[in-house]
Amino acid sequence: MKTLIKTLVLSLCIINFTSCNANEKKDTALVLAKTERHNPNKQFIKVALLLDTSNSMDGLIDQAKAQLWDIVNELSYAKCGEDKPKLQIALYEYGNDNLNGDEGFIRQVLAFSNDLDEISKQLFSLTTNGGNEYCGHVIQTSLNQLKWGENEDDLKLIFIAGNEPFSQGKISYQDAAKQAHKNGVSVNTIFCGDYNQGIATYWKDGADLSHGDYMAINHNHATTYVATPYDDKILKLNQKLNGTYVAYGRIGEKKMALQAEQDSNAEGYSEANAVSRTVSKSSHLYQNSNWDLVDAEKRKDFKFENLKKEDLPQELKDKSITEIKLYVKNKRQEREVIQQEIQQLNEKRRLYIKSKNSEDKNGLENAMIKAIKTQAKEKKYTW
Image 1 (cartoon, rainbow, N blue to C red):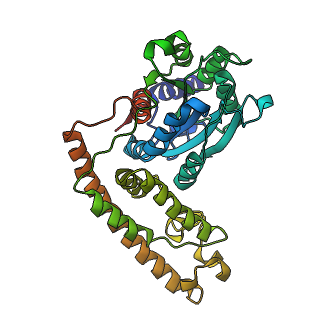
Image 2 (cartoon, rainbow, N blue to C red):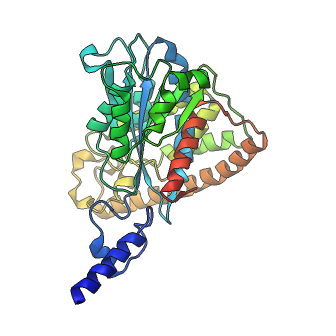
C-alpha cells in the first residue's frame, strides 16, 4: 500500500511539471523524478539557420548579415521563469554549386555555438553561386549532425530560407520534417518571394509537418535603419567596453582581433548596425570565457593559480596572483558599469525607434522573431 501511495504522489508531481519551470524549487519527490532531460539552469534557445546561397540569394545573405545583432538582442530579453536562457546558433549553407554535390550541395558552416563573434565571422564569409537547392537534405543533415540535446525545456528551431521548390532532391522533405517534429525540433520555412508561390511550392507544407511557421519575405528589400540621438553615445561606450577585455591563453590575442574585426563588419553596414552589435556585447549572451579573464573568472572550474605566465597578457606577466585578481576585479566592475549604461541608453533608443513606427515588417529579422516568440510561448518563455 505504501509503495502504491508513493507511486501515485510521484506521478502527480510529474504531471504538474511544466516547461520552463525546471528552475523553480521542487519538493523531494519531484527532484527524484527529474531525469537528465531536465537540466536546471541550462535552458537554451537553439537556432539552426539554413541559408540558400545560390546566385539569387545575395539579398537574403545581406539581410542575415545586417540583422544578426537585432535578432540576438531580441533573444537576449527572453526569460525562462526568472532565468535567462542561453543562446546557441548553428549555420548551414545549401544550394551552392561550389559545394560537394555528393553531399547534396550542403555545408555545415558552424555547429551550435554561443561565440557571437565567430557566428558573425562565418556569416560574413558566405558567398553565393549556383545552384541546386535540396531542402529535405539540408534539414535532415542538420538534425543528424547537430547536438540538439535532450532537455525538453530547450527551444529547438530550424529556420530554412530559400526560393526554389521545397520538394527538390532525393531526400523527402516530408520525412525530414516529421523527423524534426519527433525530435522536438520545429522547422520554420522562409520563402523568399510571393507568399502564395511559397505555398504552391510546398514551403508551407514543410513547416506544417513539424508544427513550425511558414513565412514569406522580400529578400531583396534593403534593411532600413533609424538613426537615434543615442547612437553616438553607445558607440563611444563600445570603445570603452573593448578596453575591459583581458585576453589570455593561446587564442586570446586572435579572439580580441576577431572582436575588433566584427565591430568593423557591423559598422560596414551602417552606424545603426554597429550600435546593435554594441548592445549585444552588453548582454548576457555575449560571453568569452575561453579567452577573456573577466568572463573566465565566472566559471566554476577556473582558478587563477592554474594560469601560466606565458598565457597572461604583457601587463600581467610579472604580477602576483593577488595583483592579477585585483586587476580582473577592477575590469569586471568597469565593464558592468559600461554595460549597464549601454542597456539604459538602448531602452531609450528602442522607444525612439518604436515611436517612428519604422520596423521592417517584411525582412528576415521580423520573420524569425515572430516565429520564435510564438513557439517560445508554448514552452512558457516570456519577454
